[in-house]
Image (cartoon, rainbow, N blue to C red):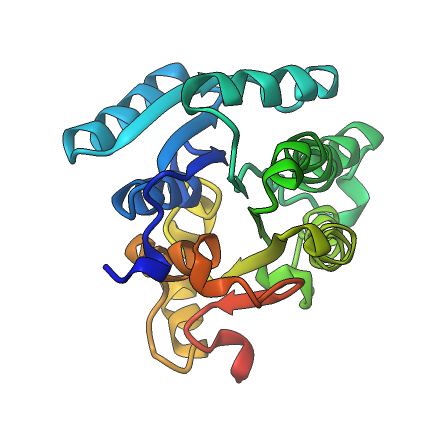
Length: 253
């Protein structure tokens, strides 16, 4: 690995790391040399993900926490820094998609979606950017979505949160990139995760979505590795405020 992509000596926090995209991103960062704190609610899943990284020679630690409790965000940020030191890289991968029709959305379900998908990435990043600012280096990677720019059925609240993530990423970049902290977002296409489980149960729909891409297939979790490491590395030091679609060309058609 060339020096620009080497994350040796860097420490990362990945939320939503017990499964799916977050878990794969934690793996990719560890393989590139970063020490990774994996945050999630399910202890058994976290332990499994940490053991997987450690068995491959990486450095990882589990942090069980509930990001829905906004009063705990400052505590979570402080706890994350206790394992390997100041957090250099933050990946906000935790998210929820309730897939409710517009007339079934309640105040509670709206708040649940917007809190976890949009508010938490900002407030957690704000806690951690203090340490990044002190050292003049940091990487924040948010998880956007195809629904950051497109409307899908039963996705009103989720789409609103992910549209907000696109603008939040730009605003974070404007606020903090002068301090050496880049802020970008990855907008994945369709990948096999718990969140997309209902989609993948419909084989006809999965095939239709694959046909919509320019490449001709849906995503595999390993497709996340390169972009994740790139945006977290010195190689991406002049890229900030961007939403990069990792979708096989879905949005190109």
